[in-house]
Length: 303
Ligand SMILES: [Zn+2]
Ligand SMILES: [Zn+2]
Image (tube, rainbow, N blue to C red; front, top):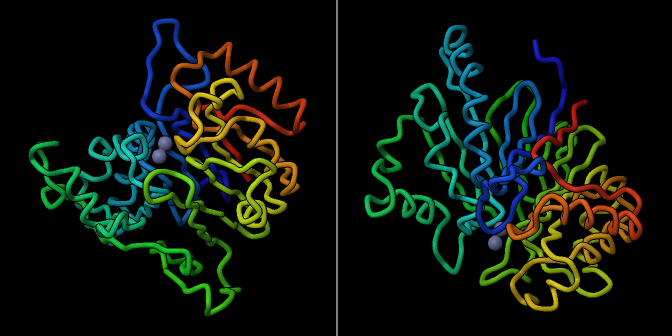
């Protein structure tokens, strides 16, 4: 029996590329990966280097499932976008190599290329020795767009995709809504709002906010329990890198304040910012929005 009904956990918090500094990092050196799950439904958002550790942690559960059930072990994987820092851990995600696992890949087409094609390309022999079809797990691929949302029926481990225009799926206690965010080069990114019962967590990485906040993002995040928001830069760094598709921490605080979220996690840390600099950012952010904290690889929310 699991000891939780719902769990969210960060496995990667770094932006751009993974780091392993000689002095170590308590905040975390792995790139983007978030787990949100219930006892039946496992959802992973993004496959940065953090997904490698998560994959290893899932192996005992996969083996146990195999002993008790003939049905596949289902994992749903959502992608915000397919920049390499959100994808580079995928080939090393251990569950891909288990024949009794079925992975539901859901993500955006980019610049006219289907999501499935993008993932397959990264496993072409020029880039990786094992192709998508040689990986033993079962797989399905679906494009996502803003008119869709992902939900789970009670006692069913497979994800369903609904149309927002069909209105609410009131019987589902676990749903994930999407919003396309356009200000990230070169074809935007997707935000995800995870809703479990009456709890809400918003994952808003790789967004470059506007001064005063983006009203669409604020509406999408309104009164969330947790907002995980890009805060790659200090204002001084942002002055050099505006247009790169990332926010400064005051921008993240602005959005959090206006959306009245209960907690803001500053996310997608610049690989050049060491732990001391990040702790300074956290202190400054708390002056702007009191419920701010650094996203770390230790962060989890268990209900
Ligand atoms: Zn990124
Ligand atoms: Zn990106």
